[in-house]
Length: 267
Image 1 (tube, helix red, strand yellow):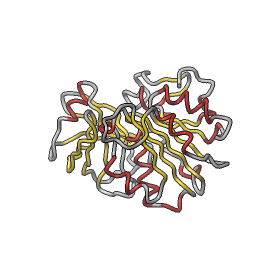
Image 2 (image 1 turned 120 degrees about the horizontal axis):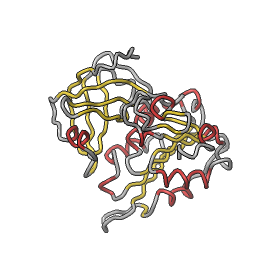
Image 3 (image 1 turned 90 degrees about the vertical axis):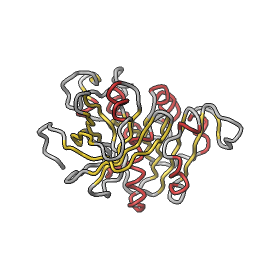
Image 4 (image 1 turned 90 degrees about the horizontal axis):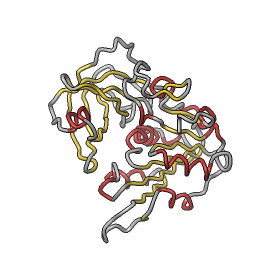
């Protein structure tokens, strides 16, 4: 784990992949860098600025990390326009990540919507390399269209160790899967007693998860949300991601529901 002096390390892009019409994935060569699934980094380009982005690869992949960036603003559009061989500043890792002891030997359900699969993929990849970590893994994933489903080339591989269910809001006649919001997938799974659920996506999806599962089939302490949407500086100085007394970038981005259920600013 790096001791921070807040000066970025220069990483080099060694792979670039278009993941959707507005999301680009990068593999970066970077030395002496370790992290936990669920943590994030600040990615930067000189002269443009920096943005917080989730790490999408497994901690077991030494010498490289993977990130994914959605082209939404000036800095992210600049990063998405970079090519193999270009440098990227990386500072981190930041945040608390997933407490793997809380999922050890248990049935784990991941629910993602929109670009929520980006940070969750790190945990999926970690479980792929450590299959005995959990009793079972279920992945519910929703996207705007088939073209917006992230990492779709990996689903067949994930199906070897997990139940994978996908849905899209809109599609053409070639799509043979589920059509509708991710809530349509809830009835396709059986939530076993003592299961852990981890959710990342738009806030409206969080509300549906809380209504359906919280305090019912999933205990509040076993329901986790990733709240990285509001992060900006990554170090608790800009106040952009405050949730009452909590800071998403410092205390999160992973929170259990019992930590935030009375915090109106969190969800």
